[in-house]
Image (tube, rainbow, N blue to C red; front, side):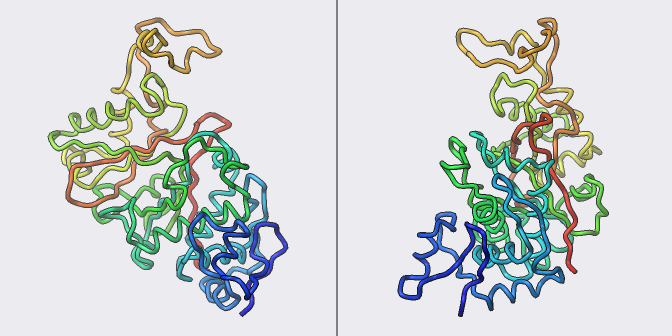
Length: 359
């Protein structure tokens, strides 16, 4: 069986049958450091059968090298990642989000920061393909989560050219740079699904791509009212990026555990109420945010602008709209997770949401 042939530098061109086929992929530098599934023509064709889109259709130009990502090339990388064919429409939607200039994959890929594209999936497709949204949602054990996230990373490596220490210059990276894919636990959420807040019909299947750091766990087993819990979550998030970075440079994703979500909803709070409370409550006086002899970092408000009066309260979050709230995780355990983003200025990354195409 021959391997799929494409003319670009980072694609699979040929595997010498006289050598170990798995080792040959490592030698060509087309893996993420783990073994890949050989993308035979038969496997790629089975993958492509899951979509009605033409194999040569352009999904987008993938930064930082702006390689042309076709449907077939996405299918090749999905095979290599271990995806089942029914996962391909989700991979294609996530890849299209990554190629959207608003997401700024070039900056995300080449920055010295830690972020990685987090895929958040909503809608009926979650159940159809077995995506995990509950216990251990950020961890191992579910093929769909693991391989969909990995397929996007392999596209970034093999089409976009994001290679650690070469074009990808993250000082540390984080484990989500292997795979970073979750589904929202819509069945355990008291609120409409996240993608409905992003302007899509609740019953559609959709992908949101968010450039995020690793999850920062927050434990609160005591708060029993919405204001108590929201204050606990918010002040636990006050140290994101840096304890004096008020306001944050970036959007933030708050992944609320189902038990915490029930506490908030019991007091009649929705997502907007929680975001507004966090924006209005987690504030510190400007004078406390300036660098001093025991803390050399300071608020970014001191750069290139007239400083506010010392007692002016500065919010941790730029606006309620910069707080993205998703419900996920197991139904037992009063935990939530905060995920800081990568920059939020005109040169930063914006979350991108797209419906999943099945035809």
